[in-house]
Length: 266
Image (cartoon, rainbow, N blue to C red):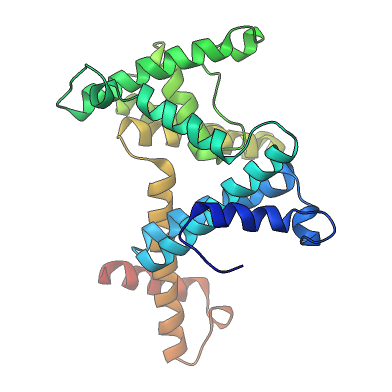
């Protein structure tokens, strides 16, 4: 087979990889569950390429993510559940349904109005999907995938609760909750250290809530902080290397001082 810009060639390659006896033993051994972690990983690598503003890498990572879609679709086709064409049809139907202001008679000039329209349409879709399902699948918090990163899932759970009025109306109130949770960690450390980790979870949940009230995505702000930590720690390592040292050779006080220098330099 030769490379091609045609999606049909990619589907043919995937089919060949999954053909018994002549296909790839590794690909043949996979199922939805074993491939799911790779799907998540590829989505993160797409986000990483975007964060690095590396468009060449983004092209490659989008291809890797597309492969995941093709892989899942092929396995579903083998089970006679659906195929890649069905996936394409489902998303095109959804896009047309959720954009009546583009493909229908409604008209909006502002993004906020479109967001409100999307929420109404998605609410209707959720209602239709929930029909016939257990009551637990119909609650205000239903529909948030458990496999989401914890920070993102916390954000979505809080946003859903907010839609039914379970929310603070002032970020300062959330900040007070954060201080309360920090105090509970300190109390646990003094009286029941085994409970402290659970209290840390409550603190993190409250911090996500504060980010939401500040209209910030917690995953994004934490990634920024991670990069900042990496940058400043690299500055510590460089400064120590100039002295003929490594972090293992330095004292905490020495590294703290270099951290402050790196922070001031920024």
